[in-house]
Length: 175
Image 1 (tube, rainbow, N blue to C red):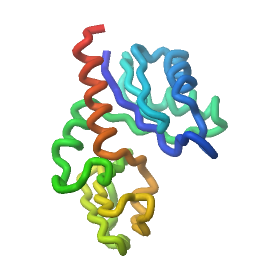
Image 2 (image 1 turned 120 degrees about the vertical axis):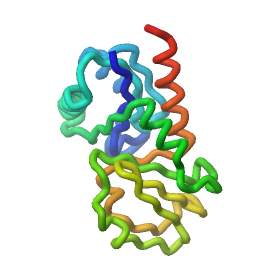
Image 3 (image 1 turned 90 degrees about the vertical axis):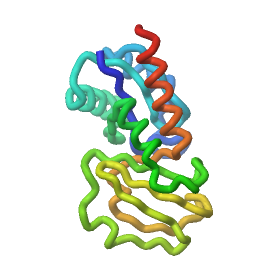
Image 4 (image 1 turned 45 degrees about the horizontal axis):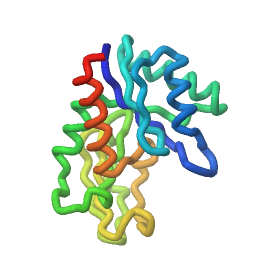
């Protein structure tokens, strides 16, 4: 069985896109995913599956669409991919909670940075299917504009590390 980490887009604690992690876990188990574990109320789930990535993604997106009326979008990564994203951060000076990694389904467009507006001194680096953004004053007050971010879902570096750790623990458990 393969271990996957699913990162859901537009899943919130309140407002639109509400989905409790209890409901997410149950939904994943209903579609046959194994050893399901969620992390914080922002759509993070670690699990085992027998199918390939494309099949798992399609099944999870369909189940979410059936439950929520539309799929919030699902991006899958392996433990190795999350560890690589954390270990190769281009901003080692950044506080981990001020560094967001946006995970994309496909590589960012080559011209993505030409549309960048970073009035708060934000730093941006594109690495294939990940976009790193360091928000020196935090992301909540940022006026950053980068259209390529809309296609993905972001997690701070602490969360990326925790999800990689959870996936490793699942691997090591030998379940």
